[in-house]
Length: 532
Image (cartoon, rainbow, N blue to C red):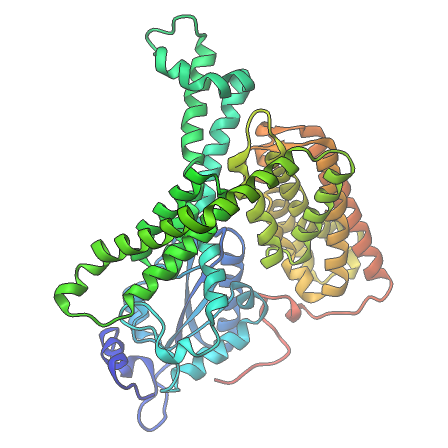
């Protein structure tokens, strides 16, 4: 297809047009070639499920597609030569694409990562169409959207949601490191004493001169302090990477500054979200004017950090930080005072949210709320850790329940492909990867999702009723050593798993509809072949 304007230079820089598109006579040289990037906030499940679904469907369609998975352990980078030969790029992401400028000049389509799982064929067909459409949006040399793209499907609401998910994604490792170190400290020393006296112990004792302090107490203080310092970066990291999601690198410094202000004022994670958005939006707007080269070179390193930090930090200090801090104080006191029926109700609601869309936006809201609240947990205020345990236990139920139904209770009501997915779901569920239930939900949502929600509600209510706590934000059954109330935690999960497994089997039994293997996302469909 023809390429015009500034995009053409970027297009050719990535490879000649002949490498990507048909010749002037319309004939195609070899197979169609695409590249794709998949990424989700946690970088664990959706990222790889979307990659598999796109790759399998492309193979069936006779399209050469290579996928870069930008997961939590890093990205499997595409070879530059592969990008140069591609006709278009598919972005199936819930967070910002890292080093997007590598794809400069390529036509692209973008959507949430879940669409890559549910509709891989449609996305590939749209990318092939975009490759032949000179008006299709293209990735520009600075990695931002072209004007056509900005007026297209992704509005500011979607961009802000992606930025917040980017912040949550980068924040989780800080919580994991800090929370686990503090949990280990509480295991080897008295939790209340080590939390209250860590600073005094570390200020007077050393490994060579412990004085009156026991070795266990000293090591506990060291671990607690390292973990506490790491978890104190939760809000600045959240704000910094929200701003990064909106404005790229110029947003990082003002975002971190706004997060530190939010911490100082006691505005918590809500203040971090607001501060990150303010810093990111200000930094983004400051990148828009076309300036002389001498001034433009100063913008990203001096002027943007200065003005965006002043804007976001000033608004937090002078206008909105105080009310947010008051709300956070109230919310913390309410959570700390929850017991009995109110705690059980909160657990049921969180369980419902975790199991309603299996890793989708509602699930992520509940999970993000739990992770962000961990920073407020103390030895005497365990409510945030109770919420974390509730969210983890509830999120494990759907894949475990579907694994039970498809491999044990109701094998004959599931296709061969679903039974294979069920075997994998045992491990996914045990690891707190709710997305393991997605293939089942996509094939039969009216039975699978209500059954999952019912099991999640019971599990959430039970974990809150028993007062189970978790200092770790992820890990499923593998973090049992840092779970307080292990037996109740396991019992709650087992009860929810059985409920989901039994209910989905009963629903399949009454009103079962035969399904073909091709209806399972990510599995090549055999019903039809699309000629491209």
